[in-house]
Each structure stands twice: as C-alpha cells, then as structure tokens.
Image 1 (cartoon, rainbow, N blue to C red):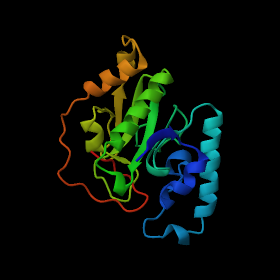
Image 2: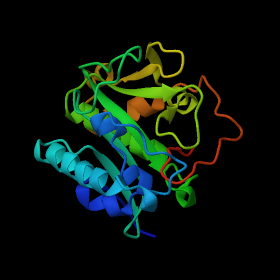
Image 3: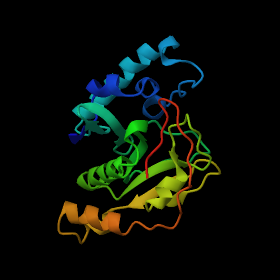
Image 4: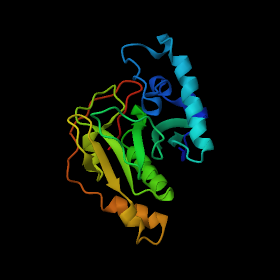
Amino acid sequence: MSRSVVPLSADHLDGLPARCGACLFWELGRPRPDPTIRPDEDELAGDARVQKGAWITAQTLDGFPPGRVVLRDGQIAAFALFGAPGTFARRRQPVPPASDDALFLATIRVDAAARGGGLGKLLLRESIRAAIEADLRAVEAYADRRYRDHDCVLPSQWLLHHGFEVHAEHPRYPLLRLEVKRTLRWAESLEQALDEILERMPRRVPLPQQAPVPRSGSTRVDR
C-alpha cells in the first residue's frame, strides 16, 4: 500500500468527508454544519464547498497551502487544516485569540479505516515542520475539554499528550501551544529540530482507554 503526504488543495475537496468539505467554521467563522442534516440534503452545502475551494486556492497562491493530506493508494486517509497567523477567522470572545507568532492548527481528521497507524501524529509533525519553515515560534490549537463526536475541535487530552501546554485559559476551549522556535535555534537541520521536538514531547496526560467514535465529518485523531 502506497502512502504520501501532499499539500491540501481545492482538488481534494471531493475526497474529504462531506461535512468537512462544506464547513467554513475555521476559514470564515461560519456555523458548523448541523450533524442532524445529511450533507446531500443541505441546500447551502454546494455554495459552502465553492467558497471553501476558493479560500484554499487563495491561501495556496499566497504561498502557504493551508494543510496537508495523507493519501493511501490515491485515497484521502487523513488531513490536517492549518495556516499562518491571521489566515483563519478570529474567534469571538471569551474564546482567547490565537497568537500572531504561531502557526494555527485548526483540526486533524483521520478516517475510521486508517486509525491506529500514527497518521494523527504524522500530520502533527507536518504542522510543526510548516511552523519551522515559516520561521514561526510555535504551533497553537484550540482544544475541547468535552470532546463531542461530531465536532471539529481537537480533543484536549490528545494535544496535551503530545506536548502542548495551556497558553490561554477558557472553561471549554482553551488555547494550547507547542513551542518550536527554541529548538530550532540550536538545531543543525530541520529534521533534527523535528526529531528533538517529538522526542521531548511529554507524556503527562494519559489518553482515555476508549474515545467516542465520530460521525462522518467529525474530528478524531488516532493514537
């Protein structure tokens, strides 16, 4: 089975879960698709897909493809959505704003059939690589302390497990941060910096024994 990691592009929209392909929550601050409505019955889904494709293309033309896709035998097995500071819609108060010196990791999703193979961590590594290449100090992400199976906010336990720390508090959606700049300062190469960051990721928070099974279009990262 062949596997490759490529930049996210508008051409990948047809291969994403239907709700993910029609969701503009992170990009434009729109409400998330109603999980009780089938995507093929949502009258607004078509327009949202067009807008999402245009947004992805605009970011790519600006020199920063907004994420990565993992392909297995040509099919999308997982994807990450991330970008430079200011790329995504600002969240409303009291949710803390993302920092201007950090790459923003919006979400990671791994297809149910591809879980257990480390694709979530692979895409996290890709976000770290993108932050270092863009000369940013950190990777930041919002975390959900009460993860819901149809949501697209990353589970807090998964991010803490991989070394993120709380940067700005919120009862439900704290902003978490993983510093990368201090490693880059002394590393001799990008690969060394990546290896050092991954090696020093603490394992302070155990992952739950069982995690909720997501519905189509939700976010769930594998262990």
